[in-house]
Structures are given as C-alpha cells and as structure tokens.
Amino acid sequence: MTKEPNSSSRIRGMVARSIATAAITLGSVGALAPVAMAGGGPADGFGGCYVTWGSTGSAGHCTPAKSSGYWGNKTACNAQSDKFTETYIKKGGYVDPWGRLSCTWSVERASLLYRF
Image (tube, rainbow, N blue to C red):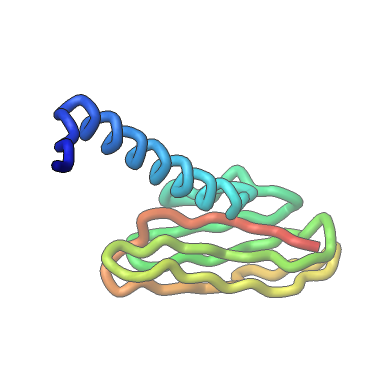
C-alpha cells in the first residue's frame, strides 16, 4: 500500500520547485551584465557610449568611445524575441548611430553592452 503525501508535503515540494526555478531564472538574467539600460531615451551610458530607444526601435551612439571594443545593443521587444547587434568601435571613434534594431510591436527596453 502506497502512502499518499499530505497537503503540507505537497505545498513544501511546490515551494521548493518555485524557489529553484526563480534562482535559475535570476541567475541567467544576471549573467547578461548590461552596462546601462535606457528608459525611452538615452541611458546613463558608459565609456562615451549609450543606447536610445523609442516606440519600435533602438540605436547605439558613441560620441566618442573612450575605449576600443565591441559595443552591443540588446533590445527587448514586446511579443517577440530579444534582438542583439554589436559593432567594433575604436577609442576616439564617433559613431552615431550604430546598431539600429527594430521591433514589430514595441520596445520594452534597450541595454548597452561592452566587451574588449
């Protein structure tokens, strides 16, 4: 005869699964490490570069870049997959705009990323 778990055991199991799922989700989001996020306009920026976004598009700007590297624009679109583009910009480079991205419906946010 098998013993059926009582309701408190089931609840504890559901809570443990929820906590584990949340930890995995938050860990993967934290690994993206955006430098700055824009809020419908320019972000605080980093190294002379920033991203802007409006209703359906986003773009990066370097005026000028304070270091050489790959500058990225990651845009979260409403009701579709995130989009990403990056471009190599040399120190002192004025590149305005770069990395234009478009969403079909609307932009939720845009992030500036950098790597050497």
